[in-house]
Image 1 (cartoon, rainbow, N blue to C red):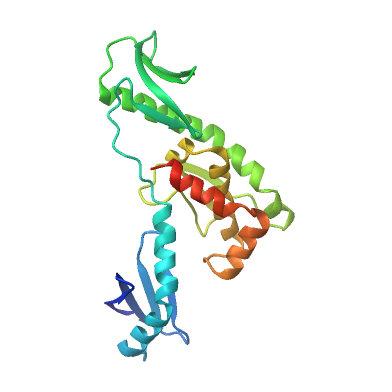
Image 2 (cartoon, rainbow, N blue to C red):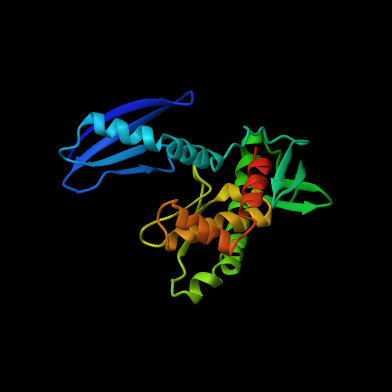
Length: 237
């Protein structure tokens, strides 16, 4: 398979893309979650033809790139010191580092207590809190999956396997093998935002891309998905 790079400017934005020539009949443009733009073209397609098609689809490409950027975690660097605020399920809690018999985290009256038997430095506080977020995500995300899976089960789709881990550029993904992966950091978002990300990814069981059919399905299942998406963007800055 031959491949080469190209770029064009649309509305002040530079769009870089990779062209892959292969034995196929049609030209396809795909925008991936990591921000890459791949053009799959028949072997005899000229570079001029590729650029012409890219110019026609530039508006759609930019829209998709902006869409994926909205899902990128934008958490500021944390210092893990008492007085700092941290989010859990959409609510803000003030961090308080305390002494306790065993390392652990407790929520009470608007405070997020992180404790241990010895004086805890920021690094240790971060490790304890990170592990707590992971455990809470593993507890709460299956509940969200159960809430939002009913439509898909009724229509013959199998429940995907759920995996929770930290992701650098996405809040969620659905693999071709049926694994739903959710970003651990999503546990900081409100419940309806978590449900939105889960539903968005479940829609990929039926439509693998972000076509008009995909959005019609998302609208059918979750009519207020845009409100939830915007709330997610505002919550996790």
